[in-house]
Length: 471
Image 1: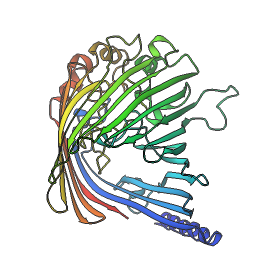
Image 2 (image 1 turned 120 degrees about the horizontal axis):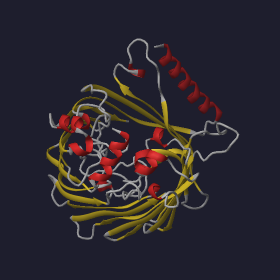
Image 3 (image 1 turned 90 degrees about the horizontal axis):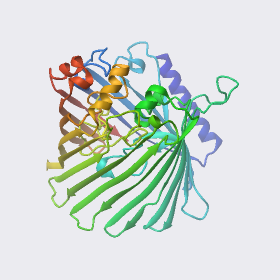
C-alpha cells in the first residue's frame, strides 16, 4: 500500500510542478480501464505450453489501466506521456497486501506541427503500424504495437495525396557500450515510406519498408525471432554482421459501389538474401475482404487470404514472407491476435503467413439498442511442405520456430468460430462477452505422437466476460 501511495504522491508533485513551471501549459488526461475474467481451455490445442512441458491454468482474472497525459503548449505542440498497469489478479501489482508495483511507460513522445504548414512530426515512443486497412484490423508485417520512432506526416494535395515517412529503432540490445572492446551489430532499425492516395470512391496506399538487422540484436526477447529469420538462421545464425530486409506493398479500399465495399493488401517481403543460402527469407501475402453496409441491423462480410509457404527443404532458405510482429485478423477471429477488446488470453495466436484461408462474418449485428454482436467463421489450411517442418522438429526437437497450431502443413487445417457481444451500459462503460471455439487436425509425423494425440482429446475454446471504461 505504501508503494501505491508513493506513486500517487510523485504523480501529484509532477503535475503540480508542471502547472507552476508554465501556467500556459494545459494538461489533458484520457484513459481506459478493463477488468475481465477468462476461461480458456486447451491452449495450443493441447492444454500445454508450446513445448509440451507445462500445463495451463484455465481461469484467470485480468485487469488493465492506462492513463494518457497530454501536456499541450498550444495547438501546434504537445508532449504525450502514457502509463500502464496490466496483470492478473493475485500477481505482481495486483497481489494482495504486499504488491510488487510495476507501472510501465507505453507512450512518451513529442508531437508538433512545422510553422505555417500542416506537416506533423512525432518523435519518441509511440503507437506504430505499417499501412493496412481497418477490415483486417492491422498490419501483417508490423502493427498494433509501439516503437521509439521519428515519424513525419505531410499532406501534399489536400484530402488527396499525402506522404508518411519514418525511422524506428526497434532494438538496441547493448545501448551505449558493447559487452567487449569489439563493436558488434546489436541494433535493428526500420525505415518506412507510405503515400496515401484518396479519390472519390477509391483509396490506395503504396508503401515500402527497409530493415537493417544486426546479427547480435536480441530478437528473441522482442518477440521478433520466429517471424523474421529463416529456419536455417534459427539453427545456425547469420554469417553477415548485418542483413537487409525489405517489404513493398499496397493496401486499397474501394467504396465506389457503396454499399458494397472492397478491401485488400498485396505485400512482398525479403531478407538476408546476401547471407548464406539457407538464411534468406522471402515470400508473398495477399488478402481480400468484401462487405455490404446497406442494412442497419447487420453488416455481412466475406474474406480470404493466401501466402507462400515453405517448400520441402530448409537448406535453400524460407519461402514465407518475413514479418516483425503482426496484428492481423478479420472479424475479431478467435484464431488470430487481432481486435479482441478483452485482449489477454483472447486467441489461438495463429500466423496467417505460410497459410491460406477464408471466412464469413456477420458484423455489427444489432436488433436491440445499445446491444451489438459479431459472429465469424474461419477456415485455414497450411501452405507449408511437411518435410521442412518435420526436418527442423527432428533436428531440434520441439522448438519455438515451428509450433503446432500456429504453423501448418498442407495436410493440416483449422476451424474457428467466435461470437462476441457488447452492451453499452453508459456511453463510456460497456459489458463485453467474447467466446471462441477452434478445432485442428495435425500430423503425428511432423509434431510427434504425444502432441498430435493430445490435440485430439478436446477442442480449444474460451469464454471471457468483463467491463471496459473509457474516459
